[in-house]
Length: 215
Image (cartoon, rainbow, N blue to C red; front, side):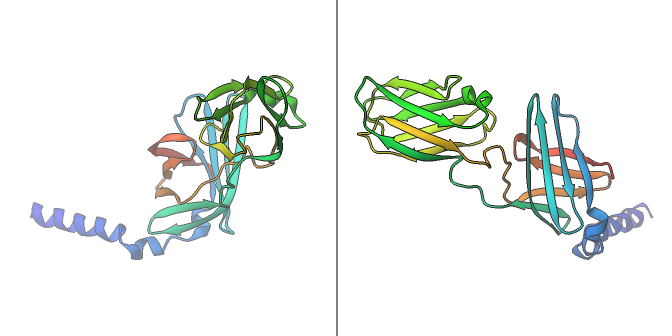
């Protein structure tokens, strides 16, 4: 008798988890706002809209970031995709060879408060050189024949921008692109649970993070 009861329970669970069961869930019932739980000093939320678009919010300290794109429901999981991530978060405006003892990199942006949060790595066969931007958006490195420049931004630690440059040049000017703070996701999967979603986050470690539905 106990075996029969266990068999019925197992069959019932299998039916609940079957593709047909998932097909009965509507996008309207899934749509809503989901808040990330139990991550210290971090606030994040996913807004799933009925029109299959989403907005992703992230806040850590004084840093606020967001992303957006399309979502779809497939076999019990929400799949999020934003527009493709651009190759770089900055644009090389100009480069030239100048006399002097330094390789100089300048970054232009109207908000000068963010300029000290940029770092530059000049990669050369003769040795790499690393430096941080000053409050005016300049960094001066010992002069090297750099074939590649890598620019890092402290507020987007998950990525950096790399540029192949003329090794004979030693003065470079960059412009910040408008999407530098945007969050990009590709095939981000969140499993639907009774009270929310479970899965990953593009800026955090772990694959079992919980997002509670609040409306």
